Length: 281
Image (cartoon, rainbow, N blue to C red):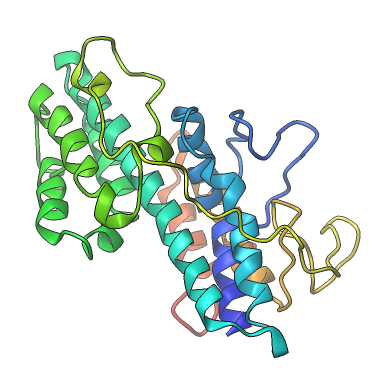
């Protein structure tokens, strides 16, 4: 079980090097180079600066789960609670993306298919989890972000906000935790009041991190820190953690002129830093 937990942390945080002298965990300046779900959290935190800093909560929540999976410290209830808190982080991040990119897809009347796609796919990173609270509402939001659309109205953008907010109470999410998008325009529906206002109840996790990890640059060790330089896996999950390096490599190939689809596909199917295994990934 601890191995699977380490896998989840590795996929989420990744292992690309992060210069912590330039970027502060808990701050709103994002690296833009990690290509991991953890950085996805961080970017939306920066977009909603008065909301909860989900990226700062993720490593200690993962650590709390790990600590309670090991040996005589095993505590199923604490592990389950940590898992739920990570689901909540994904949900908050997806909701923020839906609000932001719904408005940008509308574009004050100038439709953007790019932002429609971003809204649709970022929303789906946690829409499955949120559907466990109200499947019908989630399907309505899915329909608003239909990728076949050629227009996105003001009503669509406003409906996204109203519908995601209707999920908060059942999902244990508050308006305070989601916060307000920094790009909100005065007098628009995005500025309208939100309920339930509530409190920030996202867990602080456990900051007493497992010891024994080293920086990747210092040694070819099985137990190297992830990008946050806090969480210390107790299993060899380097291949899992290096998937974000491959995502970065794919992105680089897609930015070439002309776009290098063939190279991107090879990295996707065969791996580069994270080599192809015999399982699902």
